[in-house]
Structures are given as structure tokens and as C-alpha cells.
Image (cartoon, rainbow, N blue to C red; front, side):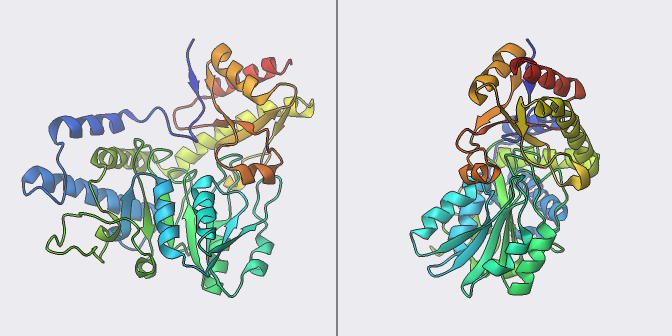
Length: 388
């Protein structure tokens, strides 16, 4: 039985063959570090790393490629930014749809005297934008928000929220895990001060590579919570205060960066619009195919009913109302070869907002290499499992 991978919201698969080839070529023919080796192979590799920073800052409308910092993943990026920026007595706003990559650091920080408040959301995962300004306090210093829900795919209005942050002097921190590589993001026009990204989802790189990009004014406001060797100013035991070394101690994931570089080139060649059109076309086909099942009370579709105006990404969660969701997900895999994710998706409060807590949902997430035929197979499988 052929497998149909519909879990791209967790990690994109398959990767473009160029990504695998680049990682293999690095491991086989280079394998060196940067900032340590005084030889040509290390210098050539540094050129690839530098070019990757340039590609990322161009993609996201950042100010300077030196402000691109590589980490292991977006969770590390959010931890570095939030824990390095917030101080006891500060207050920060977040949406009610946040992933635990945001919420667990905030809950930890709450024990250190930092407050947070959740901006309410609707049962379709939409931010209640009118509530934001009324929640700003004298000690509010920032707002952190996901660009799109990892459960229902609803897209948050970055430009509008960024304008509110600028008006009130708040720093705007964005989690782009579900949108980077699919939807356009422009730090300057959206007034984003810190953009956190992961490389292994829609940016098409391997696991273990992520990062963040800082606005120039944000750099001195974040204390580096990690420190160690950087290969620079080695005569001192003090942490460098210049970018990107300030936030990049230790050995970098160079195979990951090389793979990410290849993924970014693949995206550049096809264009974000073409990628979004493909993924959202599959999403709309899936939603249309499930609508008769929803009308009959067999499933509940979470989030917005369609993909108009790109207010939804290729992530769809459903509840099977006559069959336990975990049992349905098991059958999808073992009887039909359809691979999904079931449960609470590391976002319990988001499920409370959507009205799907504590049961959770089955999540289907579409990527570059999925096809209409695969979507149709998933729809037929759900119908049969639900007794249609």
C-alpha cells in the first residue's frame, strides 16, 4: 500500500532532491566547520552560510543579513528572544492560539514575575483584533503571535497587529512556523521586530535548523541566554556584542544550513505565489470534499470554511463525530495509507479556543508534493471510516 503523507505541518516531506543532494555533498566533500578553520574549504563554506543569511533577509524583508541568527529550531529561537528580552515586571500579550513553543516559555517566565495576557479568538481561530488595544497596560512591552494556527490554519493579521504595536511602542515578535515559505512576510512593512522561523517545514530544509531575524533596534535589548565559543575575539572570555556572534555560540548545524540554502533556492525558483496556489488549491479541494460529511453531522471542520484571500494555510483539522479521532487516525494510516497527526498538537489553549479540547482533532496538512488524487483518497477514506 502506498503511503500518502499529509503531515507537512509537522515537517515537510519529501524534501526536494536538491536539498538531500546538498547535505550529502557537504558531508562527503566538505565536512568542515566555519570560523575555526584557516583553509579554503572553510572559507568556501562560510560563503554559503553568508548567502543563506542574505536569502533569508531578502525573503522576509529584514534590514541586514548580519541580523540573521541560526538556531536548532523555532522553539529555541522563541526561547532566546522571549527569555532574553523580557524582565521581571514586564507584561506581554499573546494570542489565544499559540503553540507551546510560545506558551511554555511564557509560563516559565510568569514564575519570574513576568505577566502575560491572551488576546481572545473566535471558534474559527480568528484573532479578535478590536480587543488588542484595550489589553495594553502601562508595563506592556511586547506582543508575540503566531502567523497561522498549527491546528486550523487560520492566518493572523500581521500588518494590522504590527501597526498597533508601532503605535503603542511595543515590540512585535512573530512565530512563522506554519507560513514561512508559503505566505509573504515583510518585517519592515509589518513592523516586526523579531521574526522566528524554522527551516524544516515550508522552507524545505532538514530538521535541526531554524533561526530568527532581528530589527536593528532589538539587538541590544535581548540578553544572550546562551554563550560559548564563536571563533571570534578568542582573546576574551566575554560574549561578543556584535551580530550574529552574540547569539550563535558553539558549533553550528552546517549540514542543516547547507540543506536550508538548497531549499530556499528551490522556493525562489518556483515563487511563493505558485507554492501557495498549489497548497491552498489542495486545501480548498479537501474542504469542499468534506462539506457533505459535515452537513450530515459526521465530521466537524475546524477553522475558516475556505481559503479566500489567503486567510488560511494548508492545515485542516477535523473531528470525526461518530468515531473516536484516535481510532479514525489509526485506520486512516493502516487501512488507507493516509498519514496524519491526531491529538492536541502542542497547543492546548488553541484547542480550547476552537472548542476541541480535550478530545483534540485529526490534522491534515498539505505540501508542495501532494496531489489532487491524494486529497481525493483522503476524503474517500474519511467518508468510509465515518460510515458514509
